[in-house]
Image (cartoon, rainbow, N blue to C red; front, side, top):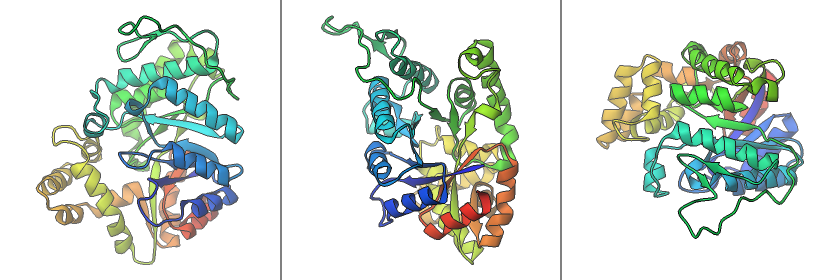
Length: 351
């Protein structure tokens, strides 16, 4: 199991992301990842961190698909890959309706259809086999409803690699299956190593579709399976002597997502908690959060849920809890932490 580092949003705290990333690079971490919502973007900090490091791969977790055309994302990724000597990992995702429609001002649409077209277009751009043409439900290139002066174009620069690794952030059954079918890796959120059986059916469905459609012959030599697909969840690592204090540091994040990151009738993170068997707690968290009782919502997050999706406590407890992750089918554990000592402990325990 490899290790990654997720530095999250830039400027959201006084954390020295450069120092964290440089240390992760020194420790032999596989990758560092940046995020975006409606504050700092994911790309600018990633390039800054790439310039400060030597070997660590740099990835976006995630670039929002609706914020950029697939050709713009392909251009950006190819450029960073050239600048870094082949270290770019392209993490994309749908985000949620509140951000897509409330911030970017675009219809949320069909995220599975959008992702399929998006990835197909990016691979065509990097492949440079012919000028780009794509006419789908979400993307029409060259567009027909314009000046009629548009023509198919080919990427001017030559990418360092003919296809960059693509990671898809996915939560629901169809999106997880799509990640397994057409992406190189999956970026799950609130992943529990004890609940892999929930996801395995969807993943296997995606592998089967990929292999049946001939993708294996083109890209994976013998079939796509867990040996050539990167499962890379971000896992909060909160290290300290007081286990309860460590758990309490994680609970506001879980309460925000389960309770308020989405509407009552459409919240993907609420659905995850329900799938894990915490339906009653999820309803209570959501009711309290949407009623403006945020602290009470935080207090309603079960300790057991925190322990399933995060690593909390002193070094010895983290080592004990890490065993489940090592035995799971996770291939890259991305550490969500701002504690440089926690990075060092994780390196000692896992690398």
